[in-house]
Image (cartoon, rainbow, N blue to C red; front, side, top):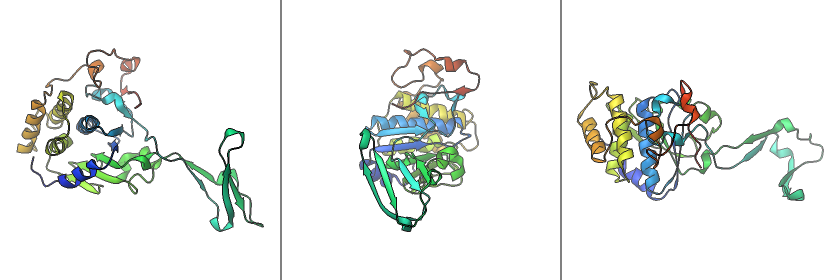
Length: 275
């Protein structure tokens, strides 16, 4: 696992940030979800505040991965922004008061100017601005983010981006790009090992399952020495070679939780929101 990745730069970033976001693309695959969840669990163990988000609901095929119930489909937090589609040169002043125990914003227009209408007020509850670092796993182009980008238009503009991808393109400020790698889990394993991030058997299991699926049980012609090194690393962590049943694939509650009614649905897995 000696690919020329920007490990030092990422380590410096992680040493000074707390709020992190991990996003994988729509039409995602098992490997991308496994890699994202392994990274999520490791960064959480490192004491970071991490949210993990998908543009689409989780499918039942991902239910064997530990932590899948923490994936949400919305980016939360951040500022609430009110934008007025109105010439700023016509605005005299902006003030506020708390009459009635509520926040009232008062926009006074200049004499002779047209009044502001409700239709000119645009509300944005985008939460992407509250994150210090955003990880994109397997994202090749902005369109892969679907509704997440439409509702958080500054996601790729105002945030430090770490792109992890075994595809041909990357969108990051820091890019962990390796088209020769058969799996994103191989790249994430390299990040976790090189940066000495916290590990446990659940992280190892997600990495190992992602590698097995992406390489067709290590039969893919793209399998290389780094792939086997990643698998060996996952096994040393205690990674399970077989998939867990859905009800045990939760954080720190293996074997204790009963499956919810959602498991009876044929195609979609709906996880819980992050508290």
